[in-house]
Length: 375
Image (cartoon, rainbow, N blue to C red; front, side, top):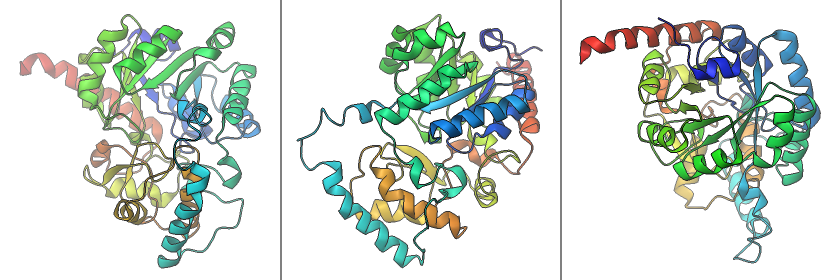
């Protein structure tokens, strides 16, 4: 049985599996491994400074001669900051209070203030203190690198890539956008994207309030004939098969590739994935300022109990960054085990990425072959 779909031809890949662009975790090594195995590897470059992004692209090209992509963020919330000025206390006015809470938490947990530049939890959410400068200028500088380097695929993990599509398309770059609602899907479809990722509430990282099973078919119907990738809680072949039955052209998979030898997160974070079940995640704004699913920790619990309202992106990272960095230095899995989706209960070991991809594809073929007999 062949699993070839429309995106295989469009992306130049063998199987309809795309690595999610997980910030810091989807490094050149992991992206190349997925591409070499027949899927599409995506660099999770959200926190990369432009010069580092350029190096990541060059490294990926050294590791594979197959197509690959780059994922960055284009959040509208950052562009709206000036428009919302004057509506209550500004994020900068509220920042000292939240930073004081973070310092109190660190003191209670015996966490030492990290020396800059510091690594944040092995790449999740990724970056040292200098990287947490998310701004309109930062995102635009990243996009200039993507365009100058003529990457095969670009994925907007947040936001609408419409303003850059003419230049990307002139380079032959395939453009994708991740959405969490039908209205967002229609917006990026009107902008001219080539592929839409419908990412449901089950997903790790930034996600939707709508469940994956409900979201995917509605997006498929809304944007046809644009191909759709489904995402959120897809950790094995049965999930890929289900997406294909829902009308998706493939899967955008993240968490299943976190527990791989090539993933750019720490060993203790990989073990946290293996040790977790479907109830071990929570959706919180405590890390980035946007709703994101991550593994429960002392930090997520303390934040929830505090009753504090998170600052919008990019300001919340100024609160959470030192906490997560200190936890990483101390190798404290109980402070920031990482972002992950609800499908992690199906992950029971750390494996090479090629093995994970092969098992997903073979599992999907078995599930689809067995489907007629179950009706």
